[in-house]
Length: 308
Ligand code: KIV
Image (cartoon, rainbow, N blue to C red):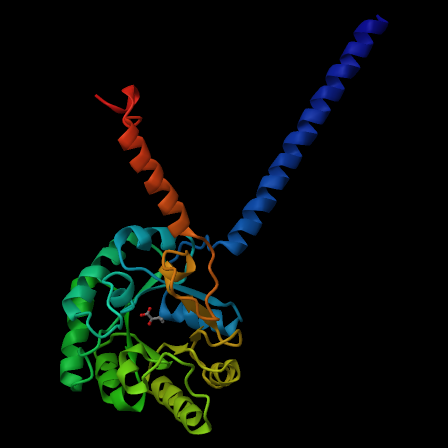
């Protein structure tokens, strides 16, 4: 009788502790899920210009990375990024050119089309390449329409302020959202002569602020500021009501953008101060390729299970 009672108590206690563990596992999983969702963007709604504005207004930082092909677009989108830029930096990263100038409208369209196919949530911004919008606003509009029609991207990015304002306005009037780009504008590298920090002097800084206001007044939904003093970028972000995304422009802006291949360590000979490398994918690839070559040479690959 005593043994039976002790057994029942034992079974009861075991059931109780099982229940306790199950309940706590559920709570633990829910907690992890909640934290994961707040870090990684689990909101599956498409990112729009309106949602970016809301993010600025509630102080939520905007994340932006480049991508130039379907696979990278898919991976970056799955990582929860807000904006994917099909940047004309593809000219350097994908084509091996020393500047962004040689990439053509046809090449940008080919890349952007591939990226768009891989993206479900992020906003896809396509860079208008050098020579496709500087001539006159009519030409700019027809380049813009080609990009939108053929790539199904969401918006366009153009480098410049007052000088390209007419083109910006004409593109906007066709219902195409435009992101501005001020500060270091790589398409003007031949004018600058180097990729050094821009707008350190008062005159250039004041022109940049004026240009930022002009772009906002024209109707741009956001502006990228590249490689300028952090205090100037912060001033622009606080004066404008549209989001300001920085690259090498400090922390006082509404979001950050980096070139994907730089931040995952696929490019190695480019190390500006603003670049944080989050991985060394070139190292991983080198190792994998050397391993594969060795396996092929030694006859280790393929083995019996890897053939038909
Ligand atoms: O082309 C590009 O990658 C860019 C970013 C540097 C903003 O314009």
